Length: 451
Image 1 (tube, rainbow, N blue to C red):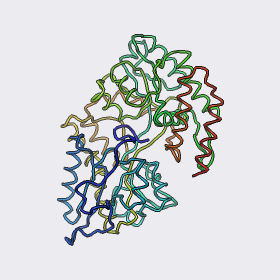
Image 2: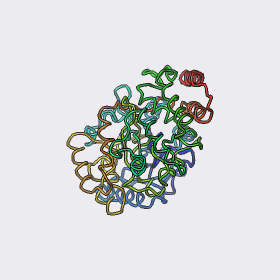
Image 3: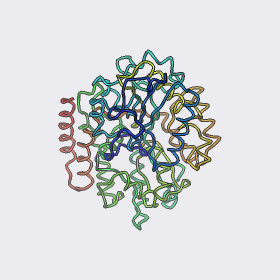
Image 4: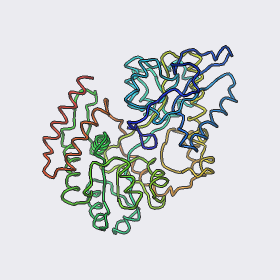
């Protein structure tokens, strides 16, 4: 999964826009723009027209790039979501992929394995920002020592909570729970407020339950698969602890409410309406809760992932079509540098512009850079902050001691299995946790064996 704003939704398909110059192919490998001498690249993930502010920023920045680089012609393709997992492989295999294309972190090795990615290693000298990007994010797109993609954003999971409900329940809003025992105790107090208030909510449908189970397993120090990606590892004491905790909050404490089989929109609606105390998420949920679900920035805070062991990270980046010419690769890297990888500037980093247009500035993530580049980015962000940054300090402090872990291989198939595991615990009081874990482990082993 990627984090919310452009989460991997199983609707809509990524298609070529009317701007494409060829009738069928999105990525051509032909770097000459109709004999003009320009290098032409097609790029996807332009924000949809419905996202008016983001769309205007994106188009403005691409136009500015064109003025500064008249020898490069960037042809944008818009789609939401940026990648549809149901059509992604077919688009690659059919030669329909753009020259520079959006991917989730979990796609990187797969795209390389099926021989659809260009090797960027010889061209990294043309990407001036590359060494400033966090190494753990760069490594995601590095396979067998070769670089096949460039990170654009990253996120890590934490605990979003409602400060107003914490205060009302007699809890300290400046001290979010950091263990699952504390989550359970705090959820029980919040649910005791009554009037339909839920202490803690979790997903359990549309693969999102499996995604959160994975995050919770990481938080306990466990893993879904072994380090070599060959063995299923959910039938463990850590896996049992995750399910037992959910079972006890749901059935013993009644702190999770009676309505289950929830997905992200349900939980966001509950939090935005002030009826939910806590749920797991990344920082980018916060503006959605305010702008779309009726929440208030001052009431929404972020704590670290409970458990103290680890947290799930995700994000996205761009890879390059294996048919790209050297000129197209160099042009694409130059575009990425301008759009996403210049601290305090570009589509994601122009915080002054974002503030002027009432977009949230000051959320703790994404945090892409290190060293001087990170210092500059954070300085500009802080100067333009328009959200209560103090509400996120516990998240930043807590993250320092957590192991950052990417999603497992074959993530969506595995999440589908674990959806059933989590939903059974939340809908059946007498669910057999040991048997559920055994069954899930066997099914995941089968997925890994098929490969």
